[in-house]
Image 1: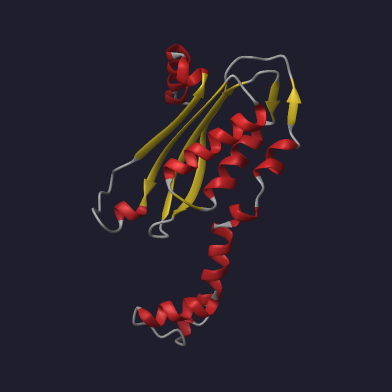
Image 2: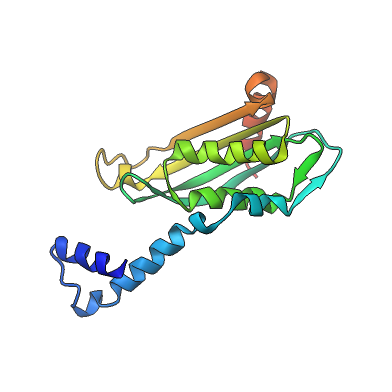
Length: 182
């Protein structure tokens, strides 16, 4: 990867042999490996070792989960908050696992719409809950730094499955809970 980064530096008119750029190819390779580590993470392993049987069928919400991702179209960051909820059907998961699941998919080249779906469908598949809701609010540097250059725009996506899709009151409860200030 370092040779390709040296090539990119040359292509934009830089000298990869100048003092300030000598270690840049290695640094960028290390950063990209870190930022895309989700490819080495298995969502099954993240969830499976923390699923517990519990007679609980009320909404569980984890909100304001910080995430960072890279837009697959421009390789520029997008970042924000994920809000995840599910209504268990005799199976709950350790709460840290929801945040870890967000990271599994966020740390891949992404589009926000797919990221939202992947989180929700994985929870649905692994826990078989009565419903799952995921809302992601993000800022995209590809819109701020280039293209339309809209500094204060935010993208909001949602995936609603099961009871969150079929029951308006359940959806409303979730939306009200994620709007509450901590």
